[in-house]
Image (cartoon, rainbow, N blue to C red; front, side, top):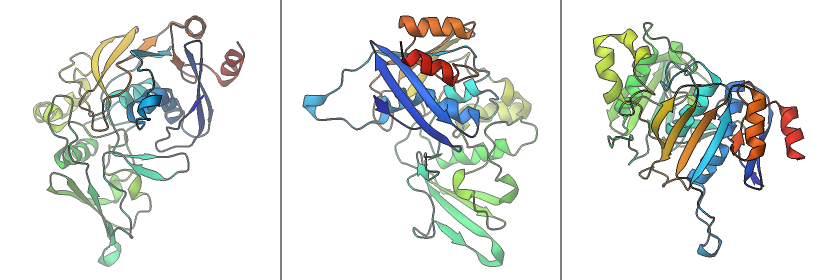
Length: 318
């Protein structure tokens, strides 16, 4: 049995991955937003990607591929405009967030080096009730096309997310009305000044960064031509545009059939131990369950794009 947790910005009480004759079943007890609960489907892949290496005598067998089963396809690979639970899951395969909440509601740094606080002096209360947070990005993080991930990407994400011409949805954090300015004094530093004290400022670095930042060099040419065109970008159709900074690289998307990701050898945490990650989609839950029992699917998530909790309990007894 492998216990693992993934719970950004929500409550996820528990996730268990059980293996039996090559099959894996995710079992979840969940409260809060369903979209975040479904992120637990990536628990196995995430654990394989970032777990520390055991002693040489206990090295685990590397698995060539993992197949995740769903019966809801994603709507887009755009971190700003995605609007489905399935989309929020797929994003996590190839995009890392800047910060992420753990099961105890404590926020952990992912693409930032630490969470600002009064103790580390990266959270400062300014005169007239204003406040300032300084975020330090991790060095040596790169987009899948080799370009460095910098503060310019974070600032541009905020710019897009606060542009009314772009239909931002799930990625909104709600901190935009409180933010006075966002600055990047150097490539690895983002300074956010708030108009007033805002207790939840640590949950998102800037507006629109719930799932991660956008690659500025990919999005900016489209934005300059037509801001509304951001929603229509060929993300998921053109692999050269569909880039992230996470553990897996996007390879192809056959809508309604499958999405294929490949391990990112240059991932900042180290190459994932799973070489290939497939998202397979089925016409209905019964077909999904049949494939799970047959071993054609390794992991399934909770409804609405996976199985209900009761169905998971029944399968566990097989």
